[in-house]
Image (tube, one colour):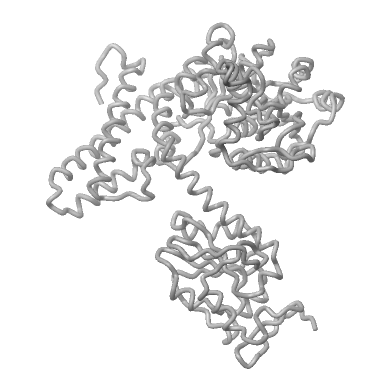
Length: 573
């Protein structure tokens, strides 16, 4: 017997649902079977229902229940739900959802810790999680209380993966902010001094083909091709590949940098003279200021929105915020994203492998490769350092571009997935590489195909060369001066209020604390790198905020005195 309409069946020991030829609960004891799963606190490790290991319920868990059924076990689960945990039930079938809410057989608890939604879209599931608050959870625990998940196994599998990825990404991003946010903010303010002579990346527009080059090992096989067809495209080189190209006497049209730390300065210092004096730099407003100064004034800025800071809003209001980019993490992904926005023509990529072919990390001639050669000796053969670096991380073996298996890791895989999201729906993205993870771009099979792509006619709709540097300045120094003074004025009352509050810590003044919290809301960059998820008013927290505010005040005062309009006189604020 099969039915396209879900039917309730009374087993004598409770109701079950018969739908699409399946009983969604045990026909003998439907209610007890669901409750037993809750009592055992065991969770199948995958959507098939095969119990490969047991996961006890833990605090700050999101309990994911695919398929509502008749809500059996929900009440019992709420009774034992750990602190700061939540139940998210998602139903993919409209008829089953309607049945659950229409029948008295389903007693659905009313509890703020329970959310029930109907969707088949992983993005919808993620939106629901964000509405609840991703920051509340450290893990996802799937719990299968009915057979409804068998009807839409792939759908629930995809939603579970999306929810897990969302939680993982949130905490990865939080760890990144803890480690990097303070440096990003420091670099951002420092780079404001370079803005008056720089340009916005939004001024670069063309219809000509752009080739983005990374320093992956596969680049070695494309060097000759790049030289032969160099005149056919605009060449954007990520920072690490610059030494390789210059050694081959290939001069890129642009160098692309994202790194905030000093690590990539070694890519440029050997060529800081005439070699790179005429090459423009495309970089993030949070990039290392020393790198920016090497290329100044031939600099085009963009701004990665790594967090919705109030500072970004004030930069926007003062017309000092370069073209916003999403927070992409990888310099290669960001360079391709930039190319897609600069040109309306073809975008080609090479040397973006996101993997370790033959356990190599970079192409020959890159700083990493040269450092490995310099360290080689009788006890450290060439290649050993690179091999050890690769083996020191958790590795994955995934299907590569050519169908074979490639070695990669979770971080590089996430970058390839990120790039796929940007290239997946485009028919103007091409990949010259034969190694590494798929990028979502069409593979160029031979030289003839490349020639055909580059021969396609294009109509220029802008300038991309050095003549663009003669354009009107986009970021007036007077507005930078105004912004810095405004930030200093915001910092001063915060410093005074916190000091006064800490000096009278024995007197509890809620109004004073509330005033401090209001002032700090506008200065969220002071505590963005703190491990706490929200502002706190306790003494240890405020001491750290005070140190951060005093350091920032000193830094901004120094920057203000270095503004050309303030040199030679005391910069009053």
